[in-house]
Image (cartoon, rainbow, N blue to C red; front, side, top):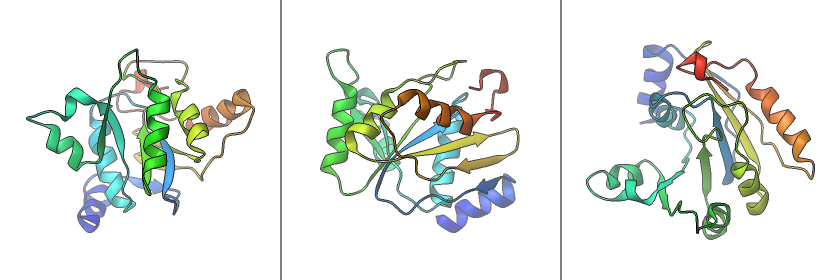
Length: 179
């Protein structure tokens, strides 16, 4: 699958990869911008190109028949996203249980235009004591840009300035919805 994904990504799609996915067993991977459902499939291809097992979480109803098998096969983990459940604590617990867990999230929380990222990913990384890897899906430049691991500090404002700077100028599939 690695070779097929590379052929598809580089030759057929004509995209570039900027940076390298780090050799680490645990991290929170934030992917921005999330403007179209195609982003999910681009992520599946990129995951094979970088040859890493990368997971995601989804509402538990997605994991029921008839498509539950697909979401599990592609690295999904069901979670209860109800208001009564603390999602950050739930995901931190998943990190603690597993030897390898690289969690990909879209920190915008939607495919609509946003001006601020949600903070859940940040508190997950902090609680699980894992770094954040930033990944930009830049449809304008036809490239995926990967950051070095970023370790949170005790200054959330400064950390978010660094995170926002990484994604500055990146265009999603639907450019007007880009972060």
